[in-house]
Length: 334
Ligand code: NAI
Ligand code: MG
Image 1 (cartoon, rainbow, N blue to C red):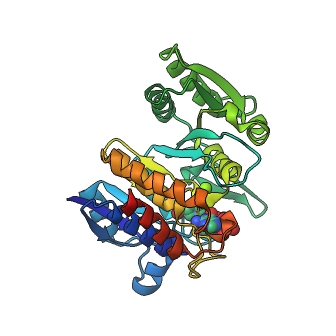
Image 2 (spheres, rainbow, N blue to C red):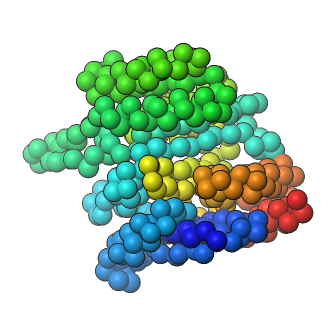
């Protein structure tokens, strides 16, 4: 019996986490879910954004499945997502972007993994107004964080038989910060002589990705570029509805989709549950339940390629719950 924290989040979060929970349970895995929540809805009810039980549950279980949490634009509270990643030093944000047969895209074979540094860069939270008409933000890059994310990217490439790692940067302009990041990526690359290493500047990278994404296998980059490239890459394979993710540290991991709370479609039972379901499959791989993880990924693939029960974003007309039911049926058949 595993004990896992479940954070439903807000917006489409409760709908898609409910789907993922049902799909994981359909594999027969025995899980005791510790359900706790944070965000604006919790604040409305209880006057606190992240109640203590969220921290307590994470610290006890060291593993969580999480729905998206809205962060207001402009004034308002700071991101709870960033807070959790920093507080627990979940330094690797890993986002596999893979073509799923059945989803029409211009590309035959996209299969890449983004390693996004998850604790620093312009997400430092150090920002201030310098006058009524000017403001500045601090971009923090450290050797420690850059070395460890580069190492994770190369370790992954080696373990998964990927032949190339691409470091993405803007060191031509940000010579000290991105320059340091690049130095670290280079240093790690030297310890993996069998893996090709290349460096691409972020603006060129965007063009390369939309022209010929299959030339990339593993991408390693700083926090902000990684955030932006993740959504761009999601667009190469059919959108945010299908791309999962993981925030992994030394002794804790939180699994969540790349997408946000999608307020435009929240509460309508039309969100695509795939991204969170596949985040759940990543979680099962993390705890060593690889067969069950594969069963989930297969069931998702079959459901999408058959095309009968797919959500609106993929060109179908099924509800979140109907697509979830179809995936569960495939798991039970297998
Ligand atoms: P978003 O990712 O929520 O939505 C962007 C577009 O993709 C929308 O049109 C949405 O309907 C669509 N979309 C997203 N997920 C989908 C799904 N599962 N199925 C079908 N369509 C889907 O990005 P947006 O609107 O910029 O952000 C909304 C809120 O989410 C913001 O407050 C943001 O801060 C927060 N956010 C939270 C994240 C997290 O909790 N880790 C990550 C990203 C954003
Ligand atoms: Mg993002």
